[in-house]
Length: 261
Image (cartoon, rainbow, N blue to C red; front, side, top):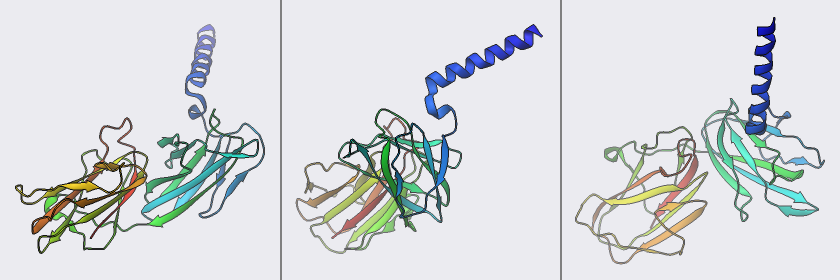
């Protein structure tokens, strides 16, 4: 009997320690709420509760979440977490102060948007999501790169759980020497990287940024470039992939768009 009581005490002590160090993520949310697409979830009371908003995705694509909180009647940003069907975190999103909109690539199934109790979560807030279906057509390797036609925009996805060395391959074909303007948009939980690789290794590519923030990766922005001089006739590949240097790159996800003219 004493051994059994000792085991019970050890178990209770372990639970107490887990609660202290892991906080709300150690247990289920205070309550689950179904949330339909294009519908605002509005919390007007000032209770201290963590809510998991359950959403059902009909097919592969991406969602865009819009959130804002109210503190003393003034609009502010807020914390959210995006969870899979097992309530495992796909991303803990601590938004920057300038943004109320965030993007996640998804597949068909159930997900949760958690509004946790934290120092950056107001008691009163509004939350909604919009879903966009995407039928991605990208090459899995360079030899299977998909052609992007001039003035056409393609949309691709970076899914949570995908290997860090998984690449999406595209190509543009120039039938004559010409100047090119390239637009790359990336939205997600971390940077989405891209490279332009000429089929002819001797071909020169000199790109001028049309916006000062443009680099060879994008996070919630559109990067635009134009060539300094005409590109030689031929094929140019575009490789898209996750930011492998990220602290949570394996679970990161997002969407991107590419266009050239």
